[in-house]
Image (cartoon, rainbow, N blue to C red):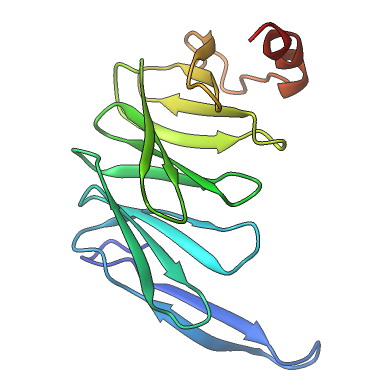
Amino acid sequence: MVTNDSTISLDIREKESSTSPYQLRQTLSRHNSVGNSVAWSPDGNFVATGGNDGSIRIWDTKSGQEVRMLVGHRNAVRSVAWSPDGRWLASGSADNTVKMWEAQSGQELRMLVSHRNAVTSVAWSPDGRWLASGSADNTVRLWAAQGGQEVRMLLRAYPKNPFALFSFNELQSYSDRL
């Protein structure tokens, strides 16, 4: 659960059996300001959270312990997303940037700069080769994850066209040229 007070509080619950109620397993809280985003790792062992303090925190879901803090954004982190293989994290921030991180070490791999307003959403393609970012500048940008090149921009994706659709398969022909 992302809260309005000065913490992110995430209750992790599990069932003992199909007939038992969910039991609280862990509560995670640590950000020093409002929490904005939460994302599970693909294997379910970790949760990443992003907050107004500009940090991203990675939590072990079994122990409830913070295992890593990623610092690099100059403003609130609005969105976090794990790559499908769990090796990378992407973050979008009110500082108008997208950052890619190596999840294991917490090292910043690249900063993607093209948006002219806060980045409010990031999402990986199912194969992990592409990253999409949405912004308050009314654009959706598509990036090649490997090199960080912007490969497409959808102008004014909002509000005139609230459902900007594209296929990551369309990008296959582009990737063959990289």
